[in-house]
Each structure stands twice: as C-alpha cells, then as structure tokens.
Image 1 (cartoon, rainbow, N blue to C red):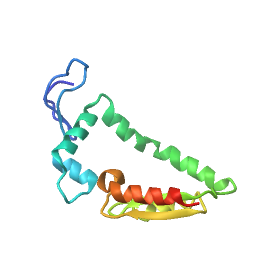
Image 2: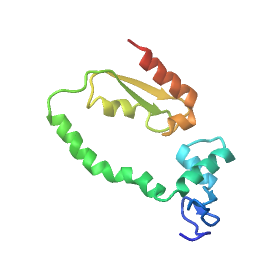
Image 3: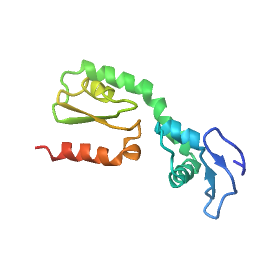
Image 4: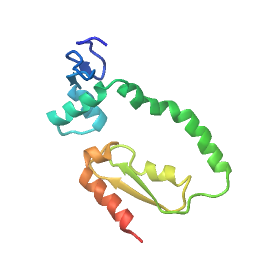
Length: 146
C-alpha cells in the first residue's frame, strides 16, 4: 500500500518506518463514534491508538474475519441443541445498553441453564472501552459469588 491512499476506515499519511509499520495513520472521528456509539467525543489519544492498530498489516482483514465464521457458528449451534444437556455452571452474559443489551443473555440461555444477565449502562458493543468502570464492577461481582 502506498502512502496517502485513503481507505474507508483508515488513511495512511506517511511512508513505512524502519520497522516496516506505517508511521502515521488517521482514523476519522465519525467512524470511531459510529463504532463506539458514543455521543461524547472520542479523544485524540484514543483515535490515534485505534488508527495505529488498524494500520498494522492484516489488521482490518483479521478484524472482519470473525464474520466469516457465522455460517460455521450456526452449524455448531444446531449440533449443540441436538446433543443432550446444557451448561449448568454459572455463565455471565453482558451486553451494552445501547447495543446488545439483554440479547446476550437470551442467546446464552440456549446453551446454559444458569445465566446471569447484566447490562452495561451508557455503552454500545465495546463495553470495556465505553464504560470500563461498570464492566469491571459487573465482572468482579459475578466472579466473587460463591
């Protein structure tokens, strides 16, 4: 990829550095705000951090590759439903208030009988990025139960 080529997600603004990595990348604020579903502005430091990660060779391909597994997930899930039994151990299902919410628990109840549902307030799908304090509290509380 040549310097200055504009991509939908990341703009590479300079040549590769000595380590072979792009030395500067730009991730448009509008893209981050849509991804994070935040109404508050994304900091310049966060934007630069994500841009550098997306600029790594293969990063976008790897990030989107998870969606290629959906067909196999459906096959695996049908097999799971045919096999007797569900998980009986405690399972924590966490969703962001502005994205998956209670859907995470609904999905987990297909595979487990002991599901604790939690919703991270003021968060989209990236719960640790958007509300780390609430996410850590939810997970810690779940893990501390006996």
